[in-house]
Length: 482
Image 1: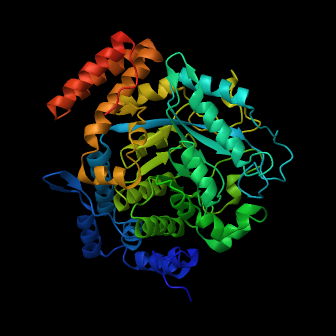
Image 2: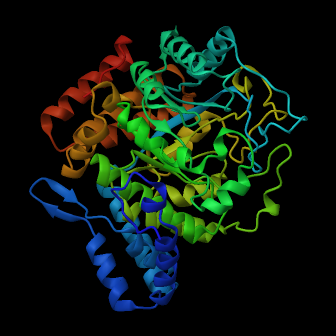
Image 3: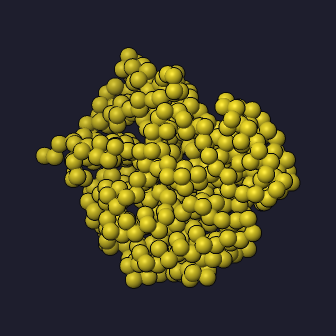
């Protein structure tokens, strides 16, 4: 029998099935153990020293106890702690991005995705470089600066060379004051050599969802195609890091399997990356399965309520305090509003999940990967965030200044990242307001910037930020960063 070992290079050791089952049993047994729950909460609280706040985080088993706890007052304490940690390390900044679907050709048989090979209803499409150019200009005209590339797995139609060419095209497009400054990539598991090529192409974060950590379920949900290989897929992040990509993003598709199992597996994967490479995931995404072309989410019997979903997000934030958390437009405005304070640090805006969707006046539905619940424009999302007291950030400075992987984490853990992130968020928001915002959004944003500038504690940083924002607003200068 395999034994749990986060340092192992074998998936059955670091995503150990028996350890997950024992973790779920332990959490259920101790969900009313108030002394234990109090000790876990105390361990997780931010501690202040001369450099700022720092957090110890939690093991997968400790976090599972918090997730299982159904004592109302303790659940409220869990939510309060998640908000405290979110504020301590991410403040009120929310990073904005958009997905860009390059191709929906796919050779896999994933039963939860409409791109699966047997679906003959969905129109298949692959963007040419000229079509990518039109899509990117449409995204730039909204104000986006950060994209996440998406494509089905098809070595003939979507070879790595096509992805690399597309990245080069995206970075080359300068339209008015628009520019895509960071391209994250969500493509199928590949080789160390190919990850090196992606790194050399200048990608930001490499994202790959495990979908489910339950191996037996995984094999049933991926009956055909290269993705059927559970071990190869699960080791993708190891190969990406070996290829020089030190910012990687994890995620599961909640609803495919028991959420307690997925929660433990997700945190064990993070522990593995920390143990082997010295740095955990840069981001964790929390998608839930949604309706799509020939996909009915009701056939999966592991759906979770909004209340459980919110608690999962809070417990992930407590367990891995320095990891960014992403929520997409799969979720409604109401759900997104609730979870922003609990741990989410990145959201998409004005997303279209069809190939070529941004170039169309009307939102196409015939080739969407999933239904988009939040269909507001980027301007509406930006205005909404500011109304809630958040700073919509279009910042990409850390990646472009080489603050990735362990360098980013060391700044974050020391509390020094706020001296970069806060002014960078304000400067990129000033760019958005000047170039793209509606009059009402611009007025609200300028008021927010004035208020937030006064929160910068270092006078030198505050002075530079004010001068740069003045140049953005009145001298048409762009791309300042700390």
